[in-house]
Amino acid sequence: MKYDYLIVGAGLFGAVFAYEMRKQGKTSLVIEKRDHIAGNIYTRSQSDINVHEYGAHIFHTSDKKVWDYVNSFAEFNNYINSPIAVYKDELYNLPFNMNTFSKMWGVRTPAEAKAEIERQIKEAGITDPQNLEEQALSLAGRDIYEKLVKGYTEKQWGRDCKELPAFIIKRLPFRFTYDNNYFNDPYQGIPKGGYTQIIEKMLEGTPVLTNTAYADYVVSEQGAQEIKAKDGNTFGKVLYTGMIDEYYGFKLGHLEYRSVRFETKELADTDNFQGNAVVNYEEREIPYTRIIEHKHFEFGKQPTTIISYEYPSEWKPGVDPYYPINNDRNNELFGQYQELAAEEKNVLFGGRLGQYKYYDMDKVILAAWEMVESEKNEER
Image (cartoon, rainbow, N blue to C red; front, side, top):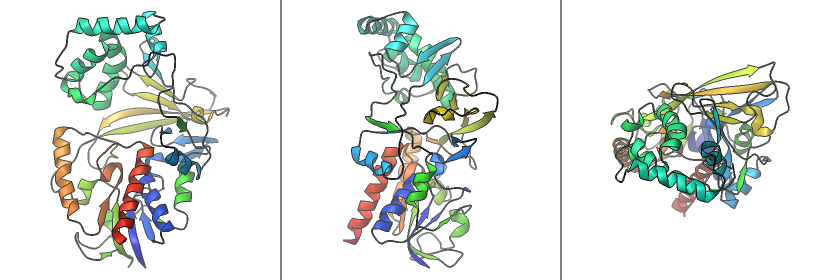
């Protein structure tokens, strides 16, 4: 068959694009190298609990149009993200708020908390931070840095804070209210029944091939006028949501990422393991950054529970990439790949890997809409 688009990747970006282009009368075929659709927002049911296979995904947005859009595919609950941080034998609320400051210093009023933070910042005496540690001390003082920033950040990046650039922490959000809501966005929640159903509905009527990698499926050379596949299908354009450097065979070098390894367990004899969906572990000596208890995302009452440990890890080829490392070296290299992409007549690059940018889910949808509009304008 002749399709208008070959969409590489059945995640949120590719699914939104396929859905919107289908409304425009365009045909697409989606290929996905994993054995399931929905990318990193894939959820699966186990013991009647929706498990976030690739880490916690909490939908939040300030855009009413985006919120109405996702609610057209699934009903969302009113889950509010309120993580807990564990430092040694101490428990703190996140984000940094009056509950945090009260537990840490015994203060009760915003004025007292602000005064203590300012005292510690002044005591640190850093006016020109040269690394992440100095930046954090200059923004928050030593207590917050030592207990709630240092260990977690070092685990996340796999490096000592003194070795990390200051720009990673541009600011630290303080809230001088007793409010544990992690996000400021007015629209928040988790889809009842998990995220996979959303992608299924977006891809209704669009053929999908799982366990199918781009390199194994397409036989055309880069830059070819017609895109041909091994099964005889042809395509007008490709939307590539994989790693842009992989598309070009890494010929300019590898872009860098951080990765995450998940260890998921069902605790058959436990109905409530930690009392919260997300608990962060701040000490570097503890190898995981957080434990997710999946049932709490949907206020579950099941007699069992399922938890996932998240272990940050170095990325290498063959490992799933999660977080782009947008330092000067990688941004420069990505710019070189973008120059190659600009020369492509029939290849689009989208999503977190194709655009080498960390996206929240609402921003993925907005970026996909933008690409759809660009495609529509090109035809006019």
